[in-house]
Length: 291
Image 1 (cartoon, rainbow, N blue to C red):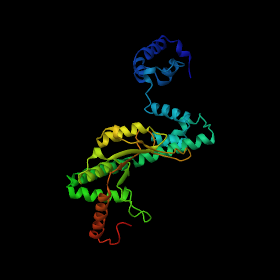
Image 2: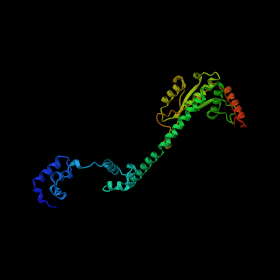
Image 3: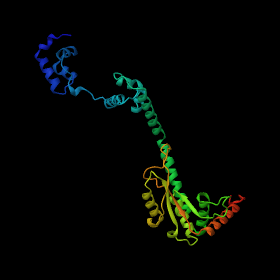
Image 4: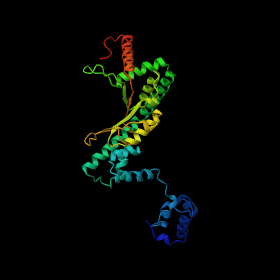
């Protein structure tokens, strides 16, 4: 390249125009009437003006790729995360070797698999949840108001599933005691008892709960659900806490079970027995409903 021409005053002016204005090389050559080689000689060692640098649309992705690499991502994971080819991801992070323990690698792969699965299944989960909510709404509307007969039938079945029953060795122990952790079933049972003229304030209540929980708070919560004073609740039944047992019913939502005793309930128990015999007969199940 001929650098001797750089002493030409026109070369000084060309360098000034190139640095201070947005005149292109073609425009400069036309302005001074010189060849491509002459213009190249005039601008030899001159830094390329910043305005001529085109922004790279993938600069942000490259920076993100570097961040992911520092976080322990592999090249395939980076490519999947940024939606680029593996070769592109490799070029961006090849200067950053992946240095991690086997434990960290396992955690990273597990986390990556979890994210991929969530992305893949999220639309299906959303549809499932929407379908479930719609079905729930439709069926709740179908139930409508319950007659006394329906309450008695439902209450008898609920009691026969969850209530205390006489045993072959104590056939005459006919005492109505219902226990459950579901407020809806508790309220159904109380309405069932009320349909026979019982007053809910005359029933006996106590909480059955693990000793590691707040029994008093649970009792007050159940009293508010049932609509009776907490003062009438009896001493709670505390279950021995076993630390080696894995329990999921813990934390604030855990309020144990409510035990509801009906005083002088032998006749009511007999009526429940009879209704269950009727249910068995009506559904052509046959057999002895007391078994």
